[in-house]
Image (cartoon, rainbow, N blue to C red):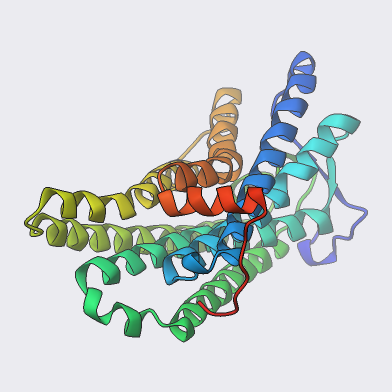
Length: 317
């Protein structure tokens, strides 16, 4: 069946989170809890930043954008997985699958680009503090986030269109709990060489270029911090980067494992790939609010004021 002619009647079957029936109830409760905590935690971050005038700075503007992207990212996959577990129905239509793929790629790549943007923000703040206000102006921050959204949309559209060209025949069990590029290419009965090449080049660039920029930024940051004469000054500079570094290590470690490391089609490999996907699609968005709030006094203070109802609104950054 030609990819372009397949309709919503055509369905895939998702492999899911586990093949074992006795684990389904526990998995449902676990993923429901993680999803609710993820949404609540990231929403609190957004509200705390939006309602506290002391946090209207570029660093927290990017953090609020990251929290928004995380909510959308995890909402693309987890609710559908929960419905499939609860109804014991793993089917997903062709149109729904491609729609999920597009938004998953958009919000996932947005996380990557925002982490790179946040590294650049820290680089300017620490290495060029006198020019920080001018370089990271409100206009510049909005442009950076807009460019991130535009690039992620274009990348997602490219991959989704290439998947749309493929044909899918008898083997329709997607070896994952959501529709992703690799699993969809595995179940296609078309030649996927073009898709694989674009995934390698474009996908590799989307992951490795931001990761490289983050590394360069932190090499420059560390070099600048080591030149600070006082131990207290060095600690203060490092403390502003610790949370971001923790999130970068967690997110990129699992993303690189999932997309840039080859895997076979064996059941053990499918379970390993699913575990890696859970790490960056569910666990990382879950942990981000805790990492940023527990290691940041300003965020803890803002969250405390928000929960106590002592907030102040302002349109200024």
